[in-house]
Image 1 (tube, one colour):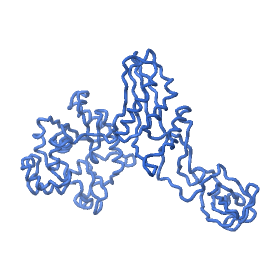
Image 2 (cartoon, rainbow, N blue to C red):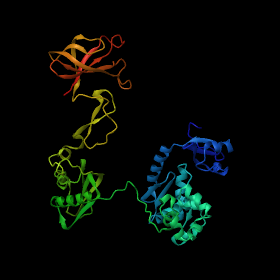
Image 3 (tube, rainbow, N blue to C red):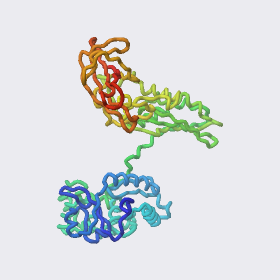
Image 4 (cartoon, one colour):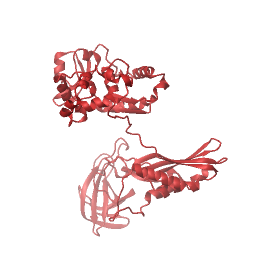
Length: 488
């Protein structure tokens, strides 16, 4: 059962532990564990002394964070605005969406049911503010619904720990006799301001109380949500060709991109026909751009694909994919070099020949030189930036290593003299060897290892050659020598 990741029985006390300052501490506990007095933050050794039958498992904090982020996106079936709240909560802005599920009560029931189908136990609540919903879900009644006019009344009997304060502040409030939100709200504000005015948000009961009561804004804004960048031109009468309006649309779109500090990677042009049909063409860009002339040129050939019908009276240009763009200064006097048009050339080639016709080299995780890079589509800019070359590599690598004929070889070193391309080379100095073993998960059995040397001949030419195999390695005859690249 343990290997099947089955849930423990409901009557078994189980806790999840994580590393603390003085050893493992309790990170989460199920209901039987809480009933026997286990509380979060307690040391595992202390809890085990009081409850020997307690089952302790280690928490997967990174896995929990990934799962919570996926659950946050899954929860958008109820509303478009969802965010992660701490390590164990979600906040949903259901304003204007609850009536689609039959009201707030029916919506909470559906949430509990769907989460239970996923094997999750949940506590849900509806309130006018983020802080109030957080408090009622954890300390209020089951499926609590709090209208705006009863906000103060429903929060008053809850403990001050429902205000999302740190432990040191909670201990201080309890020593002062302020155990509930109601008693805290009754204290003169000036007295609390003198004590907590300089405290941070998680240690300031006044700010937390204002957030819960709605006096201090705490909006729900998804981190990945980007502003919608869109330009449109309504026409007084139907037309057949949008070419004349394209420069102004690109200019307006680029002004919005500049305002938000973004660049466009993919954009679409849509024309709304008078018969109700919509015709759309898209263009992709190799690097983020906000140059109006460049964006307009991407549609030079593609505009012919639009079927105007009886004409269209609305044109829209939307940036579907955007990325942050940093302003780069590559001139000493300021500004950028207008002659650096490689990205724009790539875009025009892709617009004419297709996205898959233009490729560029990217690093690949392999220690064999010929496999250390591969060709990828120009639009695919995703590359593992942690990949670095282990050592110096030649500026030119031969597509296929060329075998050389060794005249005389030094034991455990490079050949003292060899013939390559009908010329005799004498080794004046060398660096090495650098041993590269075969990749056993890819190469065939019997593949021999390589010893690479960086050499310089009598004329100053620097080459990169390697010896394939070793004497008596049981994988063939005598070692063979190959030239693999040239240094500057």
